[in-house]
Image: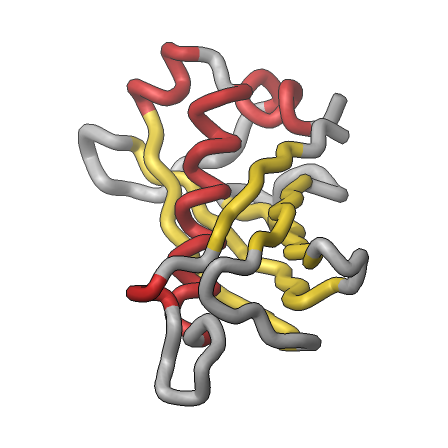
Length: 130
């Protein structure tokens, strides 16, 4: 399985009234990192032909991140697809080594032109399972 990692630093617009990263921002980051992983690993023809939508989030908030603090975001696919869907795992680790947020999101693949669900083929998923 190919793991994709990136660093994110919480900015002032990411912070809620409690002084830490807002839950909605974590969801936004999950989407941004997932799309970045897709674009970095997928065949260019597949990026042009398909688009992904999230159908389900399961998120565990384990710690807080404040403005100016950074996390390492890590995402991977543990299993192959089920028809048009697959589960993506996500973890955000603070500089203290502790997991701040963990998530499993279910994504569905759509044909970009028609907007219809399409089965994830072995060719599409192969770069993510190496």
